[in-house]
Image (cartoon, rainbow, N blue to C red; front, top):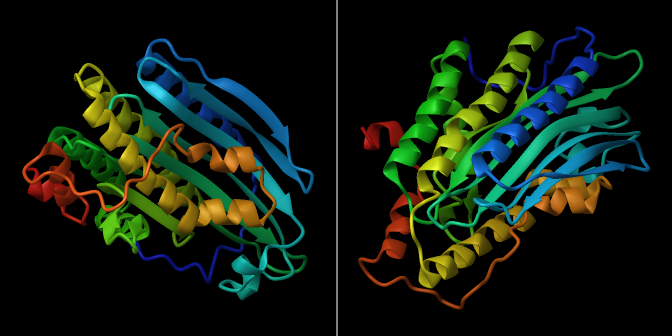
Length: 316
């Protein structure tokens, strides 16, 4: 199966969006349940909201759990009569079309610096115009941002990603891992945001059902990949120095989300709900001028992990 994306010739088959919306809602439920069970004491508080321009969603946030310092799992379905110029400038075929977007996005910021921050997202977009075929695609993925990297965690993360990709083509993992490495890259820091995972956008080169099945696999894959990592790191002891390094590195996460992340920019430019869009921010972060980790320290070790690698080969 060819894993090259061709977003210029989507299927002309009419798209029923209701089953996609229902899947995303059920996925939010499933992820929240798995994370609640893994945390042991924290609970997600739900905030239902509506968007004046069309649509709405339900944002769920956990704060001060046993493991999760702050985590958000957001479901949304939004629509509009026209897209912002930032979207149509790169996709002129979308001009003059009504649009609808739905999906689930999440970010988990654990307390313990030995548990990585994690992000996942699955989404669907469709733009329609009377008398013309709809333009649609799926997108999504998941990535891992460790502070004190654990090789077993990274291998498990990427093995889970590799395994879920296999039914969809032998090149899918390599293509979407490479896309993840390139997307979650801080140009001004010359480093990746973490150790990567999967990322894809404009996915419509397969038939609709296959694309949808892949998105379902990625959604389940996040649970399978992250919960064991949470459990493995929760009892590792840490001190104030490790906590301060975690907060310093969280600053990089903020930098990426506000400067580069297309989902954040699209949400803000299209009139999305600010609180839900910015739920990905950590509850605490800090910046330090010209920080230099001590040579040979555990903090210095992180730099070795912030460039693209074939982790399944490196960590055999």
